Image 1: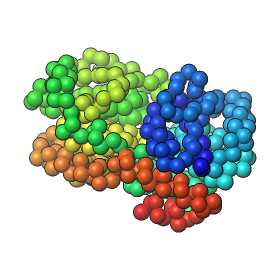
Image 2: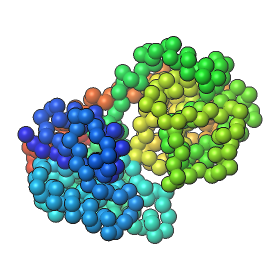
Image 3: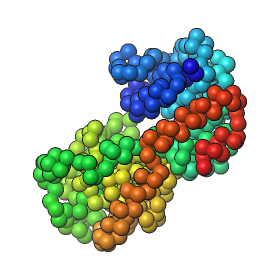
Image 4: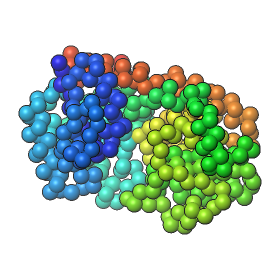
Length: 391
């Protein structure tokens, strides 16, 4: 049975790949996961090994992680490794190369360097180049992410692979289906949040950080609230200290009568169902699952013209790509959709169809298994593999 070692930096990221790992394991592969903090959290049905990856740069600890991963890979002798997230990806590609693993897949889910400046940007650029150079295949999750990697000379285009039209793992179309909701539960949530039928709800789901565009969203909403009396902003997600938004906007979120802030939830589909427009003002992204989740629920999306995010929307058909990456671009696009309800309705219908046609999780997982089978059979870097899977 072919053996795969899959790696992510943090154990909490395992939740995002758990179903994918289980699917691969059920289709003829012996697959194990490595990540940090594995001794503190367990996932039933998945074999997890602890490697002490650090999210931020830490030379001494990173060398320790590299040595431990190298020893683990030498002992396991996997046929394929697949490492994602910046730190695990870098250390995984170095360790895999040193351990003589034949097939080394580096999955790029986004580029932190896009919002970095100065020496930090230069360092992140070099580290990405190292990871891509030592890989045999670079798996990207969007067209524009591939374009950025190639145009900046980070990766050899012959190494690039994309599954379908992109995303990390597609989405569960049964979960994100407005016809499958418990209507009584939805009504209870609507009453709890004091959302009325006449309200126009702008929504956001995700981490509450600067890079996710929360500063711009709050400024745009303040302008919208002055011109539309029935507009409300529904924010779903938690703040993060590592990339905080401006304190003045934290205060606005806390005190504004028409801003509703809810914590992270495992049932975002019910919150999407209350939204009329989904705001996705991220500054950088590999792809953006929340965008296609919202569209699967029949909610048109407004996003910025940035790497990854722009691949999630058919501009003018399932949502709008703002003309400028600032509060004014966001305001103008959302304002247009508020003023044109028939346009929103047409987009809602098209949005659901767009996601069903291109981002079904089962289809994505089948394609990934096919990719692994090709790697096992080929035993070498084959440009034709990238062409076939990227079609």
